[in-house]
Length: 197
Image (cartoon, rainbow, N blue to C red; front, side, top):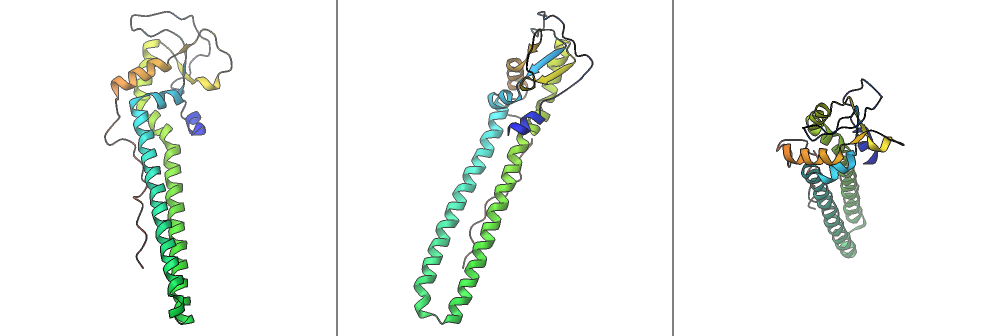
């Protein structure tokens, strides 16, 4: 997540690297060539960001619950197969055991694939989020007369530059709210039920 958030730090424009003294303007936005933003805070503290994070957490919880159900079903099936073994011929038992092993392998592969898909989507959230809020940040950049927005975590020392994180959170909440109804959504499939015997 931190790597993705670092990639999501926007350089909206780069015309000058020299900051000018800060001065309050009628817009309420301080004036500076260089503006600083904490993308992680904006993601975590805005309504839209919280919605995206809650959505992915819900999907993760659903996948965990699905995996537990499948595990319980497989344990019950294995127990049933073991109990039936005395009444089966070696050939019958071997066929049933092979089919059971194949089912276990397939379900494991499905679960691992869904976990990878979910993780990829989780890593993309910061980038998707920043794409949606980019117009808001561009508006702040314009109001401030700035030329660049930098990720605050990439700055070791600073003097005479403006941190716009709080303002960005406020404007994103005002202008975007919970975000577009058909905005970035994860494509993780609904976890399937374990196949019947």
